[in-house]
Image 1: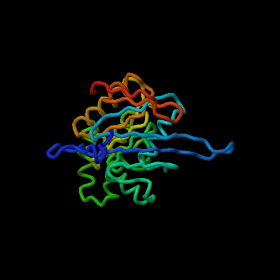
Image 2 (image 1 turned 60 degrees about the vertical axis):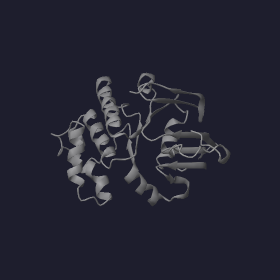
Image 3 (image 1 turned 90 degrees about the vertical axis):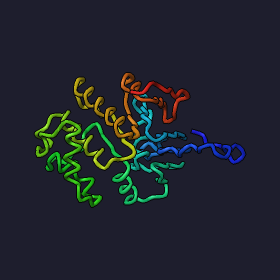
Length: 247
């Protein structure tokens, strides 16, 4: 998204376009290895409007998961500007980034990342407890019911199937009503039918709540369900960025 310069400013009475909820400019990521420095991201410019669904696609090693890590504040960019949910991540420390993730960002990983000793409802309520929300368990019950787990509140992850664990992880990601939901290969550890059910649920909740969705996937058919597909190659965004029909 490009904004008008002062000389190109809109006429009086013309509404200004809202700032994107994700705005990256010149983002690089360089990591150290025994063989020397490795350039993972190479000058990424990307703007995502609020409420849009975006798929990041590309071959293994193209940088798509690393880009997601930078956008969530879990990896610090080496250079460039990373503004997410109105906050400039490049100026913030770990505590501030964690607070922003708690308020504004939900993340669903391929490997669920549930706390094995906690029940489903305790896993989902945890982000709200960190926010000192008095309604943490009430809200967790409601969201678990939204994802079809009303009868599994008090089961620990080891008592749940893979699909059920991913539903718990999705509920946990959405419980604080984040502005942005990031999903990194969320069906990678699931069988085909269960994976389809999880993605149907993710897109349904995205449409229902108007949450911005950023999906990392290698599945072309799944990517085409998003409103926008961004192809990555060798740490860069490829020249073609395809707008598609909404899911």
